[in-house]
Length: 347
Image 1: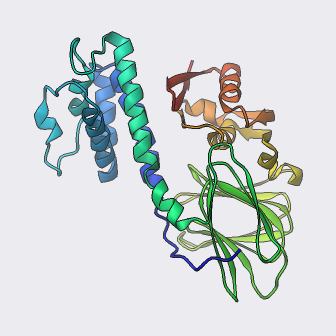
Image 2 (image 1 turned 30 degrees about the vertical axis):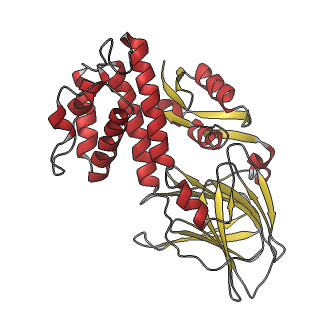
């Protein structure tokens, strides 16, 4: 299959997606404790970190208001000057829904229900670029969907859940853009036309090999099952150029650091069989894989839980059960914030 060459810029903004997730969690915390000064201070500090944070928080609050929340006591906060970052106080007042108000929520249950609706709305904000993604992608998969694509050159791509790729073959190059999620590549040798996978600004180049590339929250990961690849990121200073052989992996962070290691080649691409084989690996890597199989958001607030190293074979096809089992075994708890969001916190 052949598609025209497409522009290299990706309309899906991972920084905005990450900010939307963080804003969703902060909104839930504020909904549960609208008078908590520490929560409000945390929100103010988060908004002050960047104009993007301020914009996303303001959109989150406005989304709640459009959903029919009670009238804001501090209406001026909703119409604040754009030069002034929106504060926690701007959202605190509508969260205190009064009995008999437009939604009729009462007490803690009402606040959590409002928070669930807000999280759902934030989900919509986070995935809004999906419509644009489909214009750019040749292959898009849904939750828990795996697809195997045979390319015109004899190569094969196994596209992971919630993933998207764009294909741009020319006479001098075979190029695939990984736009979201992850994919496993089995590349047919062709010395005249190198095969390149572009994930953000990380370029993986091969002639013939089997390897995987994944877009993760903390960067781009590449692992080689057999053969050799070269991974380049010119935007680093100095530029990164790493040669990988069978069993090697690298995770190139955003924007600076790179982490390297080795693993059993047979474990690379394990997700194509619906499982994750962990051999002294952090739980964060398992959670990254589980996200593709869960029809919503998985947010981990417990950093110690994410860093904990584990061993075992984990079922990706039942993400909620797997996540709850991991949390139960490692001093964390999973809360169902809404039908679309699982929040992991310390016990």
